[in-house]
Length: 238
Image (tube, rainbow, N blue to C red; front, side, top):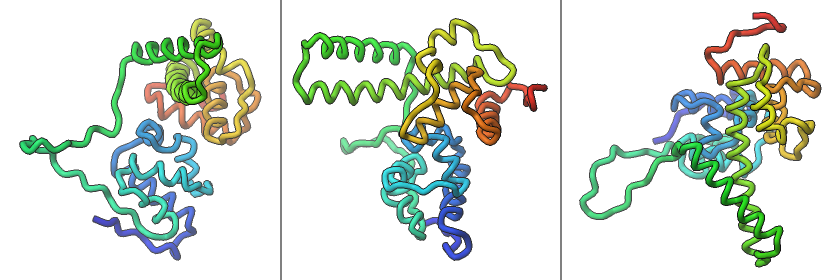
């Protein structure tokens, strides 16, 4: 099954692609944040793509296919002016021939699983620091694990800060202490998406010195979307 889209001549390539991505995301009922949770680009990157403001790498294009339930290569083909191909998912019926049934695209896990992963990564890093593990491939694998753990921890921190911080709120000292390693240093990163996330967390904690007016509006809209019960504060007033 192929989606019927307007030709590239009707809109610029970036604007057309952004519109297609948003329409597909809306069709699936997914938020920009959920696209990232399903293995796609981060919410700030999706926002730029949908606005037609992003020059998109092949790596980012490839990450769009799975969460949008397109066949591999669909996003890249669409970005080049073609159309995506939907990955048809057949209704599941119990298998009687021993064939394998594909699993879900994402799962939820308990916070205790994250803390257990953090503890295990800590022990492995301690082994490296003490010289107990020197094999290059093992050290490289531990470094990769640290990257995964760091991303999971950062997502958890963002959610906690969204619930406890934001405009008009004073962050509880315990929350501020728990995530101080993410808040005390001004946001710096060579990855634009990662930089956006770091600045957003600092903004949630009231660290607004590196946030301009446009970024303030963008962060406020994201916070309101993530916390539906929050009052729509404008210019410091409800």
